[in-house]
Length: 188
Length: 312
Image (cartoon, rainbow over the protein chains, first blue to last red):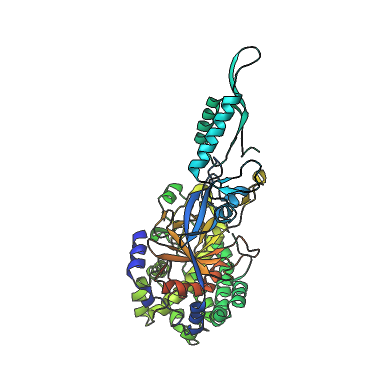
């Protein structure tokens, strides 16, 4: 049955066989003129994954000429069934908001100005500050003389953009530095 | 999702927004209303005659076999000519029938079981060639007969479905039916619709939701869930395959979805923002301006109908 319908649809010009509105005696001039005047907008649907947390809700993103024009939850994805949290629902603005920083911004101590920096400078700066703090503040032993290797002056704030596996890797690397104060943006 | 508006109310709403379609939509309002009236009238008659849909067989369903196939089509007998004479009164108002429908009145009255099967198959398969011989032997233009078939046969199928299932959709449970054609009669859909969100009391912090795609059969009136980004014709769902277009200003949730692989299209109406639910058969006709644009883009309708076929 299926192959018959398919071959029919593909192979036969149904215009020859179906009664058209024109053949029914209707004048289509006005309807066609109306359709011709209409401004049409199109889009292509692309599936993607919300980048905010490890739940990884699926979204449908609509793009036109390479531009993202809207996003919504994918109703067919079994985890979110079309629903999104407030952050996921505002995904479109995360990509399109002009106030969103797209490069590292640095404000020096006591300065009131933000300065754009490149990633090499930024990562070097972070590494130096972490090392400086660790060299200065690492507590090797507690009051009882027990080895603790504890760094209490650095705090790590995780992000819900990280997956479970990334969070585990970050946690281990922070522990290796002696950092004990850690939390996660998804919790607060 | 049962509609809250009658076909005539739906078409009136659309005419208000698109006066350019007035002459066409107003001419079809009485025909669609008569179809609805005849369907309601037939529901108890079907029950009385013991006509009903076969019970769902999940294993056949999983293989993509619709409830009604060529092997188990119901025999409507006199009900078919009964509906034909009821519909004739409104069909003859169309200019093409020029005030009389005697030809097809007689044809439907004298039908053999074989010919009845042919008419039903022509409608569900959307294939006029099945009734080519019948049209010839009754000296009737094939397009006229096909049009009459598409107006009359759906009444019987809709009554049969309503008598058996009312508006329930048992095939949506456990995604039992995953095909792009109708689980009841095997026809390709005339329109798709996106449903409203279902509020989950346990997860009220989640926003939106809804937007599940359902396909609507213009023959038996069944609705069934389908993948939002899938193509009913290719039966494939993948990223970047589904494209759509709509009016730039005031689209009213109405668009045309099409597959970039096979270039088949179907109108889609988003019901998430609507408080009143339109009659979907009337809604499909009311979106014919988008059909005109789709055909200009050389897209092929999933199901050919008189309102989406423009070449003579």
